[in-house]
Amino acid sequence: MNEISSPNSPSYSVNQDGSWSLNGNQEPYQAPTIAPNSDGTYRVMGFVTPPPIDFDTEEMRGSIQYILSKNIGEYVLVEFLIGTQEITRKQGILFYVGTSFITLYDDERNNFIVCDVFSVKFVYFYLPGQRPDFNVNAVPEPTRTTTGGMAAGLSPNSVRRR
Image (tube, helix red, strand yellow):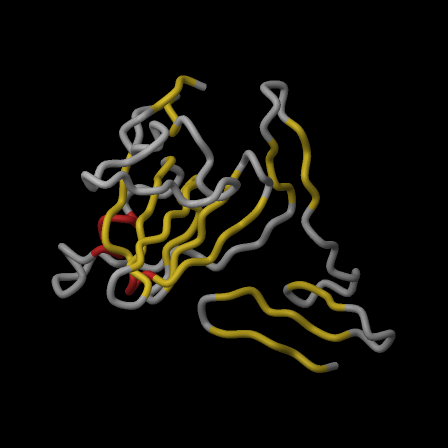
């Protein structure tokens, strides 16, 4: 039986029939399922993530990974610098923080988004029960006005209650 594992992740094995097993269990690995909540959002059942990385060391305190790791489960809007001048945004529930990436869960689109942590420039945190007015994962980036302001009320500070 072939096995794939690392110190911080679950162990996956290939069964004789070609299916995958998790952590030595002979039952084939079942993909995560999505279940609706009563408020119209969704929850992921059976999603296996590696254990959190301990960023609480002297050299990591004050890093973006440290700040983000202390806010797992919070709703965020993240701005990334692409190249030298382009800013792109992603938003969602902060699901996981790795050494070189973060994972956001977009509960409106039911997607996980893996993002490069080294291009993160700004992170907006929202108060409980508040979200941005628009889901930037689903709409084109807002256009800039000639004065440099945000058009169409798509400011990261525009919020709605959930």
